[in-house]
Length: 261
Image 1 (cartoon, helix red, strand yellow):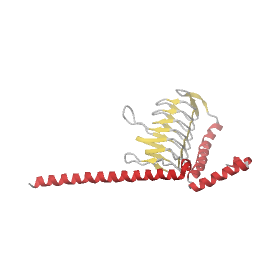
Image 2: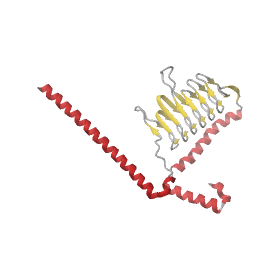
Image 3: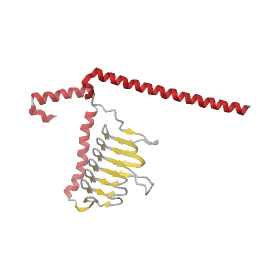
């Protein structure tokens, strides 16, 4: 009798917990739908101005499997970029618009003062079907627009030019350059101070001393540019509207000063 009573009690507790969860879920959905409805009402009140809203609701940093992205000091992550899971970004680095850093089955580490350009994809590989490979980008490295890094290592002061792909286990050593639109095959190694290009990428020539010096300057330029974008993104909407009025005044009334904006 006691055992039967205990089973009944446990069943009652489980039913109560299930009902409570359903009630909380329904309440949460109702609150969210109310917020969406209020947003639509606000858009109607604003009229055409509603479609000029410059704030982004995109979630730039997303935890995954109990891992949270770690950002150093003074890091710029663009409003529509995505940094997910096991990702560490060093100080003064930049993740530009539309880029995705997805650290789900392994780690991604970006060094300090490095730049991940617009529309880049940085991913990793697990041990399923091959050796595991994290993705590591060193200090002062520049990954240009539209490039893909997958389970590879990019050294300090290296430059992966736009539209390139670097596959699993590949290494681009420090002060090396991968030419635009190139494909560095899995396990390949781009030695220090060399330019590789092509699909697959092959040795082209050694870099000059001037070219090597410009690599670090390129990373600094990206950081300085990111500070301008960050300043604009942090502005209050009223300040944005005031700036827009100023731009319109200078362009219409004094076109010779348009370059100021």
